[in-house]
Image (cartoon, rainbow, N blue to C red; front, side, top):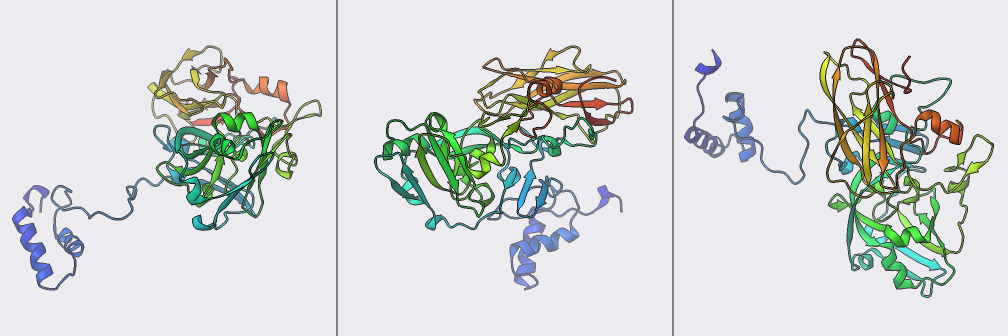
Length: 418
């Protein structure tokens, strides 16, 4: 029977049918009745009542973005699908993860934070204690210092690399908690103190040294993320959050802060998270994440079906402050034009940029470069290698390049045209 000639279920018939099947004992709930009637009703959603409310919302069946998971024994990570997201806030369940010994099972009511060392009054804070202090919220990015470090290699440059695999160790959230400065004033920092040691409650006992000036400026003891309690993989019930610093300093499952007069040189900041330089020395405590940008569209594995106008889109961020400018090149870096920035443009947060590109159907390379409010400009990969050598896999913030072939295929590569 043609669609237009099918019998339609009127509102009165719907009410009568629903009441009838329930009264007849054929189904027990209104939800069951909806399913039964829907079997006989047209597929037009305006003619069939939808499902009822639930305790927890869900994504549409066709919208199921996933993190890219990489695991080696207990050391594991998952990467945010940056190219699939909108705006700047990362859904909590898609925020990247990086663990050194798995995710511990810690109960809210059992967790304690010790603050001691060069303080007047060492104190232990339980979670209900922390909840009584003034609450602050900040929208800030978090990025692993190894983001992108495993991709660039002079000898073997892969081309089939997605944005998620390249820079997925980046996410942005609204973080909520107590300013670290509030608690340090409570315990009374002694003269001469200049660093803290932050220690986690996982079996790796992740520990990092952080300058005291930084934590007094804008660090947070975070217990909330995007309107809910932080999730176990993000440090439940408490994590240190250092805006703009490399992600591992934002120690999860935080259980201890020791105030000191020098860095502690822990296992995690000596065996890892140092930058080998080309001259044989290493750069240690390279904590700030420099300005960076990445084009999220077009990118691998997308194929441009036709020449013509396309909108280049991407993300930019800097641990030094606000992004003030993003430029885009569509000829391999020979010329640059300003991209439009999409507000809000926040301190130490990601910002969206976009630029209309009239692709002529020829081979080309597209790139982006970010500038922050300090005047720092995102370098080329050659400039980064010249300054730091090729041995480090940390702080790879150089320009990202995507090659567009005549076929429309987009692949990953370096910035020069060949």
